[in-house]
Length: 495
Ligand code: ZN
Image 1 (tube, rainbow, N blue to C red):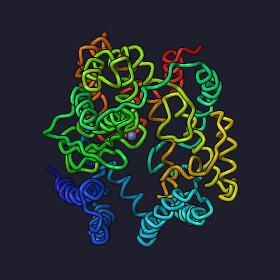
Image 2 (tube, rainbow, N blue to C red):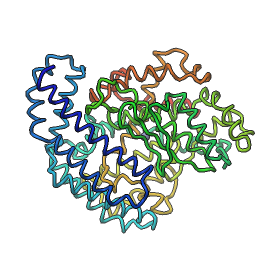
Image 3 (cartoon, rainbow, N blue to C red):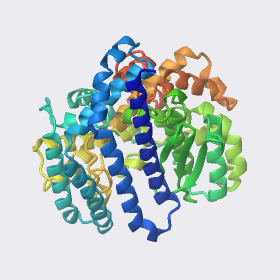
Image 4 (cartoon, helix red, strand yellow):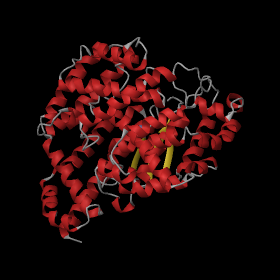
């Protein structure tokens, strides 16, 4: 191997070890750690992250990627080595633009503002959170100023989560969705749909075994995965064969089943990355939108489909005879696809979810552009919420205070949730075209053909290519809202 390339891989391998260890401490904090461990844990993590950051932004990494330009151009564009050099150069140049002092303030403010948000939400007091939101917005302006001016300053924030996509492109996709979704929501939700799943009881042990049954059918195995319980469900990967999924159980609903299917979608993506990329910065899913396309594909397109329900229904009835004995498979399928506008984004159904995101994208883009002030934010939220979803927001904890993202400084993250939904349908259509009779296999509990196709055409690429390049390979074209809209219209029976 070229000497410089070998040195680069050794350095990046160690940085990957440090970052994965830090992520493991994060997981431990949310899953295992006794509460009093928090204060010393913050130091452990800050140290690991500082050392990893210093090692990565070191001059030597820059010299190596610059010396390796000839090696890179002699290799195929999508080869592991050319991709490693190219992606490392981009990451390094970006990381070097952020002064260490600003990075530290961003981290520090995020943790303080998040604490302030937790109490402001509990007290339903936007005025207590507003100074923190102002501080976050000032910091975001400082961050944006680290880069060359872009057409829209928001582009720099989007670049952290969906590099290569501009605010203008997102706005164009969302404008089309809005045109169809707003009247569709008014129409679908006015049609009575026979109610939801009732209120159980769904004992926790049964929920865990049903969640595991669905995940195992999708590709979860105990050699490489774990399932634990947390307040907020999430998925973390500390290696291609070390994936941690979490969920939460409430005895009066079956949300844990859908959260398991969502998180295993993220997990399967990480599990499917090519082993040749392990211990490099390429050994992970390709940014937020594609990642979310996979959680949504497994949770909604597969997990809320009639063939899937036909497979799972006998197990559900056997596990929860009291709560679900009277539910036919068709009624169960209707209940888990019920459309009903609601205030909280994370509880929203497939049809209304998009408008929750479009609202947030519009507001945060205006906050960053300076055309909306934090003083006017709750009113702007409530007015548009009623326009888009037909509901009057009664209090800020059900409105502007509901999400953690802005407190952590995650501006530019929201749109990737909905881009993921749109992409999930295009990827699904490509899989169906390649694998005839795919859905019929679901009725037998066989999801392996879909899993293998996704691994070969998407997951294995890891972060070698940009999100747009990766998506074009798996879906055969650029992002297009029409297949997603057709999917919703045909599933929910509106023209
Ligand atoms: Zn997700």
